[in-house]
Amino acid sequence: MTKDERYPALQLFIDGHWIDAGSRHLDDVLNPATGEVLSQVPHATDDDINAAAEAAGRTFKSWKASPPMSGRRSFARPQT
Image 1 (spheres, one colour):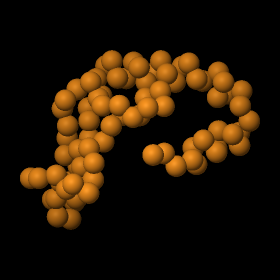
Image 2 (cartoon, rainbow, N blue to C red):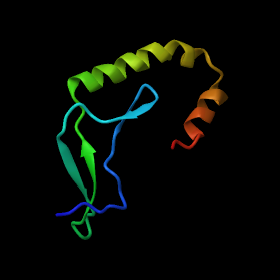
Image 3 (spheres, rainbow, N blue to C red):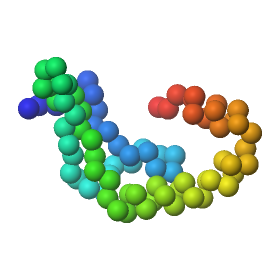
Image 4 (cartoon, rainbow, N blue to C red):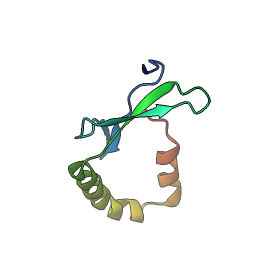
């Protein structure tokens, strides 16, 4: 099957940045109605997971101390 170019290959969002996974292994995301390949999902490696956990640990204290509405605004902000 060929990938539908309207849907980009996905990346991992770690430490505020979109990055490629350490693994080159991708799984197809299929349209269940047609079987068409819509996109591909990367497999995170142990290093990717550790980097994400470390980034979360670094920011947890400041996030925990921030007012609830400031955290809500950051989640509502569109990402590009």
